[in-house]
Length: 124
Image (cartoon, rainbow, N blue to C red; front, side, top):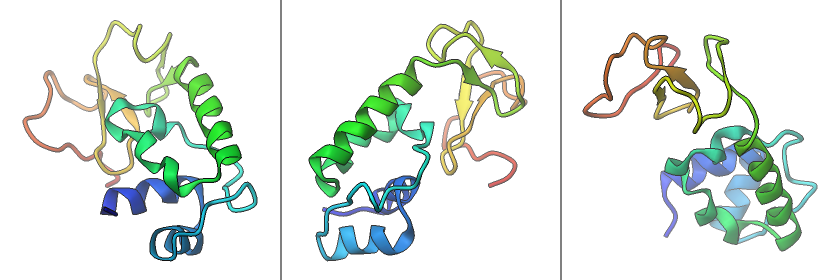
């Protein structure tokens, strides 16, 4: 079952016309369809990026998972440009926009605790 989340997340990897063809026509996303840069949005556990695997050819999916693996082990940069060692090793707590998914320290987002509902950054 296709969801709005699928449309949004596929849009991180390819252009709108390719997303439409993949979702409505069942066409597989090929290496030529991919955007040149894979976003780090997929490294967040909340994105459940593996639900998108069936939209991609096997070779493209292998590249995506490899890049996301390396991104998940890279240094993280708060949207306010503060560096943390890694997302999991950071002592300070993080918050992430439910729309565009940038990560911010709680203090950078003017929060002291986790929001009770969805949270959207100032840009969204």
